[in-house]
Image (cartoon, rainbow, N blue to C red):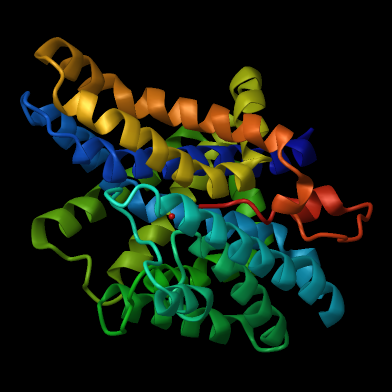
Amino acid sequence: MVKANRISWADVAKGICILLVVLWHVIMKHYLQVDWHIGGRVRGLWGTLGEQLLPLRMPLFFAVSGFFAVRAVQRPWSAVVRTKVAKFYYLYVLWLIVHTAVLALVPDFATERADGPLKFLAQLTITPSNLWYLYALALYFVIAKVARRVPSWLVLGLAFALSAMASAGWLDVPGDRGGVYQNLVFFLAGLYGKGLIEDLAARARWRRLFLVGTPYVVLLAVIAIFDAKTWFGLWPLVSGVAIVLGVTAAGLVSRWERLTAALTSIGRRTLPIYVIHLPLLALIHAALIKPLSSAGPAIQWTAAIAEPVLLTALLTYLCLFLHRHLPSPLFDLPFAPRTADAVERTRAEAPAS
């Protein structure tokens, strides 16, 4: 039972993270673009909530991916390149083409897109798009494999420094390149600290959740009051605290059978949600932006309160529905061999932005 819980907490964490990713995109790329004629407090609360969860979503996602990557990194180079590096980059390129085509149909949708051949080439190579999680994973597996025999403290120290420099604005980070720089340390932390993270989830207690949650709130307040996000080292530190908080929370949630079943079902299928939800959101935004902006107070108040949650749920459902009916080469490397541990390997693949 303990072993099963140690797996379920990670799927719970991934399920929560992907829902938060979708919610964040709904808020930033659609909800806050509506011309609201009602009081601004409600929509301000949604925006604030999304910002407070920024240190949690992607860092926890990458820590869980690193947690599941331990065995993969130990395989020969040929296996790592085929099952991880080539696979993730193939998915990145494939869905970058899909995103570019769909987003061209919705030019007013507030997101980065390749509006010409040079920008598309840049997104393929040095400045990843909204799909940067897949790009980052392909790169991170190479780094983890190359650094396998280097002392872990040195690799983590260099990765922390890279994250700190990127978050402090010391590096050029166009597009989503900053996310790639900032999150390597969390992938490696999950990789090197698998036993520690596993124990943290297995021994989760409400008291620890409170003890970790309190400094997390304090650090977020410091960032907000002093505009301290660019203080050197503070952002990766806050994200590290958020990972401990997220793992503890996932460990506690995984003890509730019904909630665990729902979240693990989502957590084991985050890849289709990650790659499909943004084009769908762009199309839904195009359909809703004018009616919502011109709606009366009653409809606007209802939408202002409930739309982010309802639209997040709808997008998640549609992504999973489409996943069941779309061909498998859209979600896996074509002709990839299937082995006995394929299920375990795929758990390291599912994200978020």
